[in-house]
Each structure stands twice: as C-alpha cells, then as structure tokens.
Image 1 (cartoon, each protein chain N blue to C red):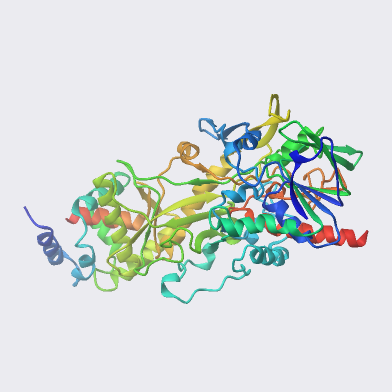
Image 2: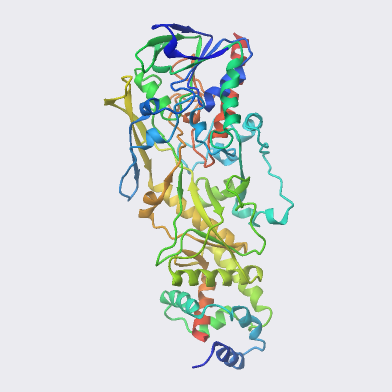
Length: 509
Length: 107
C-alpha cells in the first residue's frame, strides 16, 4: 500500500494490522513479500529510513569483546554498530551477495558437538532453499552437486573416505553492493501491494504481553513521537543481536530458561602472510591444470570452497571447516622462505603428478563456531541509546574446542591433499595468534536458538517463541549451529518456511 | 669443488642398482640451499639418519623406474597415517623430509 515515514504521523497513532513484522531487513522483507497480495493486513516497522543515516545507525552502538582460550582479550567495541545496517533492506545494503546453503552435516546432531542438531534436515529445507534462490535470482543448489565437465573446473580428486568436498558459493545481484537498482526494487516494490504498509523511522522499543500473548508494541521515533502497534501475530526480525536486545528489554520476554542472548555464534576467517621465518597460509597445488573451480579470476564469480562433510567431521571429531582458495602474488618478503616454498612445492608436484611446476594459491580457513552458552549478549542498563533502550554487551567467546578443531581440520585437509597427490598445505599460525589475526564476519547467529524443548531453545521448530503463542522470530538468531557459509540464503529459506507456516496457521484458524 | 652433476655422477657409480639417474634426475634442478635447509630441518629431529639408512628406506629395491611410484606410495601412506614433517608451516610427509635429507647429504 505504501511506505510511510512514521514521524509524519500524529503523535500516539495506533497502528493496527493482522500481522506486524518488526524489522525491514532481508528476513522481514522476504516475509512481507510472501504475504504481499494476500488476505492478511501486514505492517512492517523499520527503524531506519531508505538509506543509511548516522543518527539511526548510532542506535546500534554497544560494546564487544572477543575471548579465546589462551589468548589476550580483543576489544571490538565498534562491532555492534559497524556489523549491520539499520535501514530498509537491513544489512543487505552492505552485503557482498555471497550465497550458499548450509551443508547436510550442519543440520545433523553430532554427538561430539554439544548443542548440535536442528529440528529440520537439509533435505527438508531443499524446497525453501530453491525458493530463496529464485528470490535472489541465482541458480538453485541441488542436494547432489553435478561434477563440472570443463577441465579447469574439475574438483580436486580427494578420496571419498577423506570426506572433503567442493562446496559451491555464488553471488546474487540483489544486494546493495552489487546491483543497487535491483536491490532497491527488492526492498521496496512489495510495499505496493494493497495489504502491506511499511513504516520507516519506527523503532520498536518494547513488546507488551499478558501471560503468553503479545498484546502490542511501543513504537518510538527519534523526533520524540510515540506510537503503538497492535496485531494478532508478530514477527521479530531485527537481526541476531537486536532480536535479543528487544526481548531482554521487554521484561525478559522468552527468557524463562536463561537462553535469550546465549550461544552467540559468529564466523571468523583465519589466514596469514609469510614473514622471515615461515610461509603464510598457502596451498601448493600439484596439478598443472588451473583450479578455476576454487580460485576464480574475478572475486564475485561462482566458485567452490573445500568443505568438510559429515564423514570428515566424524573421522576427525571436528565441526564444519572450509578452506577458500584465492589467487595471490607469491613474492615472499623473505627470499629464504620463498626459496624453501618453491623447492618443496616443486618436489611435491614431481612426486604427486610428475609435473614440473606447482600452482601456488593463498587460502583462508573458516570453522564452525560451536554453540557455547558463555558466548552471549547481555544488556548494559547503565548505557542507553537516544530512545532510552539499554545498549548491548557482546561477549564473543571461542573455546578451546573451536581452535583445537581448526588445527585438526587443517591437518586433516593437509593429509587428504597429500594422500591424494593433489598438493601440500601450509599453515603456520600458532594457537595463541589465532584470535589476533582473525577477521570477524557480520554473521550473528544462535541467540534465540531453535529447539523443540523450551529448556533448550527460545523458539520452537516453526520459529515461534516458546513463551508467547503469537510471536515468531525470523533470522539467523534462530540457527542452533552456525555452519560456515554466509547465513543470508538460509535466513531467507527459513523465512519462507515461516511464511508457509503462518499462512497455513491462518487457514486453520 | 664438485658440482652437483659431479656428485650425481658419482652416486650413479656407487648405486647398488643400475639406473640411479631415473630417480635422481627429477630432483636435480632443485635449489641446493633450500634442499639443504629442508633436509637439515628433518635431520634435526632424526639425528641418527645416514645416507645409507635413508637410501635403504627410500629406495629399497634400487633407484630404477619403479622407485618414483614407490616413493609416491610412501608419501601417500605417510599422509594417511598422519606421519608429517612440518617445515615453516608446510605439512609434508615424513618421506619427503627424508628425501630432502638424502638429497642434501648426497649433494
């Protein structure tokens, strides 16, 4: 119907609909798009405007510290404000557009990983992944990935028993960084439907409830105006950090079992360059043919990463792991280190394939961040934003198992590559260096985890809050485990699943 | 000072089995200093290794054409068993470490 600036409404306007979606990011928009043109009257409440604005962005400010076993704490206080976007389209404004599904192993209960297991399988998600791909105008990801025929696109010939496989990644143009006009259409056109109204600059600052029923929302604008919103059903879709903030600030809604905000999971990437003593993170490929399947000429081309499937994880007693290969300039800072690299790579390729010249590539490693109740978001009542909301404190913890598993996975991949005659791997980072050299992703997961048992999850398998029968949560905060791939495609797939559930629930009613 | 080629020629003469050049040749163009460094790094953790023991280990049936496939198999077996030699972060098989040590000794 329209996109309306909530600041232009008369003060204390009552906003009413069948459903209110809190948050106009990619999850909220996807849900609204699914409901557009349908029988339900839907309101989307977005904190920001159409574009990024510092005043709105400042509402995200908080504190963050990263902790890891045996490492010095790393303060990242700018992270809460800099790792997401508060405007219609959400963090899609700065998203690079990389897409991939979670692996079947990510959904599995793995006894060696505490708190693992989703209440849904990868196969059950396939239809939703397909629809999410269609929405993002990318090729679908079949459960069995076809083997390419082009020689340059041949996957590494790793033995099946090793359990490593090529995991595909593609890029959508539906992102603010890739194709802004296409992204703008994606995030605004749905509002033309007669049953949809988007309110901008409409910040939800409190969820009101009576018993197990949400009864309304307090909405605030930065200019001082206050409104209320009321619906039969509500969907919280403000991201993996802000979902927690709003629940905790609403008299601990959903937190009967002290789970809201715990299990924060965020991906880190690890790599290093060479120095005077050691080589950086490098893969010496033994085959003469280029590895275009993995290391593309251009950054935003479809490619594969080397992933650890369930057999590999089971054998190594690790979680998910990927190595992303990239083309790099190998002019080593130290001639001695460079000469050693060239010599051992040349020897390996002669032994492996009878070739004369190896193919040196850089790589970075990522591991699944294991669910950890001590990795958590809490509120700091002494620090409040311009709307009076308490600011967040993020304590982002990597336990001993996270880094032990990274090292075991590196060794496992090195062994698989060497045993298969595909090359050698260099990994020279010490355990105590890992946190300091890591790069933090913008992926915020796990803080309102999905579980059938209310004592183990904040939302049920449909995304409904265990403690409120008319409030649902969308987004990566419901992920029980993090996998490794960028979460956006899975966020959209889960949101489509939620949309189907909400539609069927309405029909049943 | 002997050249690398001189040493290889001498090795051919000393080899128990004919055809040493078949195996030596693929490695004759390696950076000598790098071979020495890598070989020495392996020897640091295997102080008792001699060229005789290494040769017996790496080329038990001589250095003929069959030696290279046998080396490849030994390398693969090392990786399968997790017998690694780590040099400047590189995960190499123990067999490769031994090969560098032998090449360094024979150079």
